Amino acid sequence: MEYIAALVIVIAVFIAFEYRLRKPDQIILSESAKGIAVRSARFYPRHFSLALHRTTHALQLSLDASAKGNLEVKVRLAATVAAAPAHLPALMRVGGWHAEAVSRSAKELESVLIGLVKECCEQFEIQQLSSQKIREYLQARIQATQAALGLEVLSLTILSFEPTDKQITEALRQQELARITEQTGQLTQKARIAEARAKLHADEEIAHLEHGLELKKYELKKSELERESQLANIRVDDELKRSRKRLAFDGEELAMLKKNPELLMLTPQAARLAEASQGLRNARTVVSLSPQDLARGSELFGMFQQFLRTALDSSGAGKKSGKKGKKKK
Image (cartoon, rainbow, N blue to C red; front, side, top):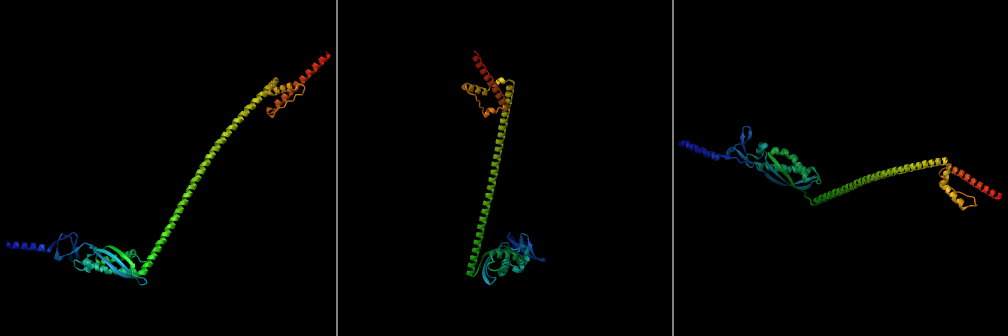
C-alpha cells in the first residue's frame, strides 16, 4: 500500500509540474507525424508543447528611400501583426520553436516592408508619390508575404511621407497649393455656371408662366368679346323685330287709309295744313313735309297729295260760286 500511495503522489506531482491550463489567448502547438498540430484540450504538457499568445504585435519603421531622379524621401509607417492560424508551419520556420516566434517573424516583416517601400518609391517621380499610393502598393504586395512569414497583418498605416530636401518640400507645397487653388477656381466657375443655369431655368419658368397667364387673359377676353357679340346680335334681332312690327303697323295704317280716305284729315299732316291755311288767308298755302314724314311711304304721300288737291279744288270752286251770287244780287 505504501508503494502505491507513493506512486500516486509521484504521479500527482508530475502532473502538477508538467501540465498547464490553456489560457483563452493562447495557441498550443505540438509536433506530430504530420507536422505542426494545435492542441484543443484545456490542459497541455508544457515540455512537449509551445504556447503562443494570440495578442498583437506592433511595429514602427522610419526609413529613407529614393524616388526617380535620386531624390531622397523619408517614410514613416506603422503596422500591427499577429500569428496567422492558417500558416503556423511558416511561422515556426521563420520564428523558430520559441514563445517569441511572432516577434522574430515581425523582424523579418520589417525587412520586407523596407524593401517594398524602396521599391515603390523608385517606380514613381517624387510629385507622384503620396502616403495613399505607398499604402496601396504595400497592401497589394504584402499578401504573399503574410503566408511566407506566418503572420497576419491587421493594420498598415503610413504615418508620414516627405522629401528630405526642404526646397523640394516647399516646391511640392507650392504645387499642391496651386492645385488646390486651381480646383477651387474650377469649383467657383462651376458654381457660377450652375447659378447661371438655375437663373436661366427660373427665367424660362417665369416666361412660361407669364405666357400661360397671357393665354388665359386672351381666352377671357375672347369669351368676353363673344358674349358682347352675342348681346349685340340679340339687340340687332330685337331692333329688327321692332322695325318689322313698325312696318307692319304702317302697312295696316296705309291699308286703313286706302279704305277710308277721310281719315287723312286726322293725320298730323292735315293738322299742319289747317294751321297754315288759317294763318295765310289770302296767300297760297304751302305745306312742307319733312323726310321723317316721307318715310311713311310714297303711297301715303301720293294719297295725301291727291287729297289736298281735291280739298283745294273744292275750296276754290266754293269761293267762285259765292262771288257770282253776290254780283247777281
